[in-house]
Length: 372
Image 1 (cartoon, rainbow, N blue to C red):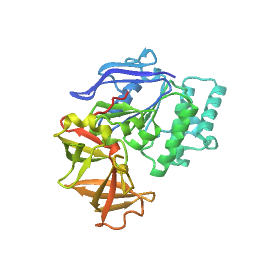
Image 2 (cartoon, one colour):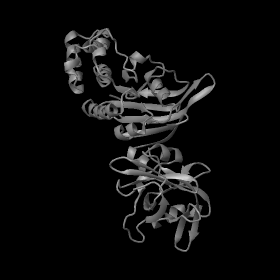
Image 3 (spheres, helix red, strand yellow):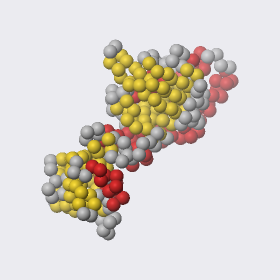
Image 4 (cartoon, rainbow, N blue to C red):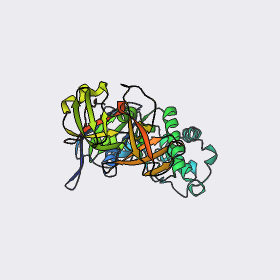
């Protein structure tokens, strides 16, 4: 087991720089998820750690060893890919043991390691089958088992659940988390799915256009995003963003979304936002902080808002309500019985204690506390 350190790591293909000098320290036994949209550099970063891509500039350490010039086979890492890459003519046992045989491990140790991994993954009864006899989830377990038997210092996962259906992805997320608890080792996991990032990670690294936008625990990123990109990427459904003007008045500050919609800023946030009074900003509030009308007292930070429903999406446990303010579409999450028909007038309650204001000049969240 080992820590992983990336120091000023750049990657350039031809004349295009795809990773822009990132710094990242991953602790021993930590589960870190790299998340971001396609083309943000997350898989390239993982492949540089694996040694499958050369580092253009910078240093990568696994443990205390600089590995820039170390071949992949000598880095003591194991990688699980998006496609299972199993040998179709081999049994599950043979697929899982193949790497150990190449390294000339004694047969009793090979059997012991394969059986231990099979028990962890609940696939012992599959050891005599071939890949064509397995489901997608079972094949992915075999691919993980092939990595586990090597007892590597670092596990690398490159979007391993992308080819699975929605129900199986949820099941496999739980399995991967259990595996990390049983096989305590450092894991770097790449995904474009922010739900995977939130549910799996000890810390999440949000990447955008070759840079690291923010690093933190999933809860830190959800509650305390540092930029509009992170605020919009983390959380499902995505955060609502509305152009606004911050107005100072005798009682404090008000967020003006339109001539009719003015929402008072909670007292706890006035000091942070006061320097921006009079400026055009971006107001952010998550759908789950816009609910059906709730009883509240003055000064609670809860504010009523009258809307007209445009689209309803029943989800069972709640209903997502879409409406507009000055042409900007927003959504709220309400009790499934609170919204009846499209086009009806409805009163919502906005929890302004969870509001964010974003400076459009740099897309930074005002007052965000840095996370590492």
